[in-house]
Image (cartoon, rainbow, N blue to C red):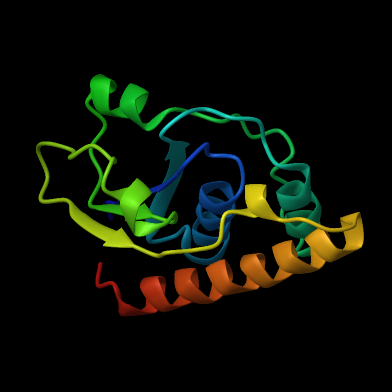
Length: 144
């Protein structure tokens, strides 16, 4: 069976898209092949690494990638899911070839989190759980 290829895109591929990719591959990797990229390649967010470790998923060795590098390579995806705000999502490239469906999950940018480490960690846990819920809903509602 061919897996459904999904690309999660955010601003720097540092947190939201990495979390979504990891959850889809972990929870529904038998049906989906998830990837992630950013409009720019940033640095992996250590808070994202920490909260995913709490969830039993190690993303500490993940590299950040630029979405346009995947586009130039000719990678094809059935779904491109922007996990950033709507204005930023509109900057994502259109992937040719397959009939690609674009979805936008407008999620908070953890780069804007302020407060103590514990306060930021609490916000990141909430974001992680929100992303997991959306990934579960997406996997359940998508026919293979």
